[in-house]
Each structure stands twice: as C-alpha cells, then as structure tokens.
Image (cartoon, rainbow, N blue to C red; front, side, top):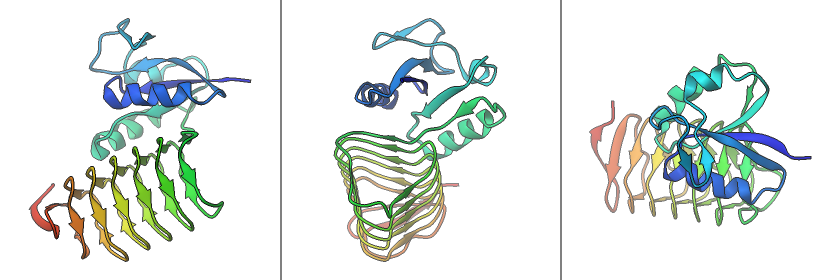
Length: 212
C-alpha cells in the first residue's frame, strides 16, 4: 500500500527529493509546498499546493520531507510546522544508499541520497541531509538539522553538532568535533576540532569568521 508524501521546498533539493521518492515504491507524491513559489505552479510535473500555512492546516494525515539544505532555515521551518499534529516526518533512504549494519540510528525526517555510505555504530539526528556520495565512518554522531553535502567524508568517531553545514568534498578527520551552527567550506580538510558558530575553510581548515 502506498502512502502519501509532500515535499516542502520546490528548489533544486526539492526536485532531487522528488526523484528519490519516485525511486521508493511505497510512496506517492501529494505535491510541493513552498512559500516562495506561487500556488498552482508545476515543478517537474508536480503542483505547488501552497506554503507553510497550507501545510499546517492540511485536513488529513500527511508525511512531509523538508528539502532545504540550509540548516538554520530547515530548523525554523520544522519548528513552525511542529504545531500541526497531522504531519509526520519519515526517513527517506535511496535504494542506492549503503548502510552497512543495523547499529546505525537515523532520526525522523532525515534524507539519505544515492551513493552515500554509512558504516557502523553511527547516530544521525532528526532532519539531517546526507547528500550524494557522502561517506560517514564508524561511531560518528551528527546533530539535528545538519547537512552533509555531496562527496563529503567523515572519518571515524567524528562528532558534528546541530545545524552544521559540511560543504561539498570536505573531509573531517578521525575524532574531530565540529561545533553547532558552524560551516565547513567546500573542499576543506578538518584535522582539528572546530568551535561552534564559525565558518572554517582551507587545507587544513581554519576558522575565518563567526556565523552568528
């Protein structure tokens, strides 16, 4: 039996989420929601049904995926929608994602895309994005709302705080901690712990500025 799911966010990540849903036969798409796109617009053949207020007042139970890459924006949307008890947030895992064993725990609303690899004893919080071909090593912990962008690599025992963005192609070496609300730039190599609320770039990564 198929279940209905909607996507909040009709941009590039939303269209990628739509392709992921099409690869999962247990789901059928209800539509997009996006406050920045006019209601009735078709995106890849799927109608935009409104914005957050339309979702909050949806008349029946509905599963929703939040297709927003920016961690802070993603968190604010989820917090706004949490007042609607009829909305649920399933985990979406692409058939071509590899989770090596059952010791990996994945929080509600998280998205694992094609080509990503998780090894063992990993904990992923709620509403985390693990994007294309990212790899996550043993004993990693990833906090709520974080986004791991395409091709990023987390080695063993890495701790990522909440609302962290790990840029495309970045590498975080073993036993390193990245503090909450930080940004790791694309291609950076993080070989030492990074405090909260900073942007770090380069090889090796250095904190350049505070993010808040």
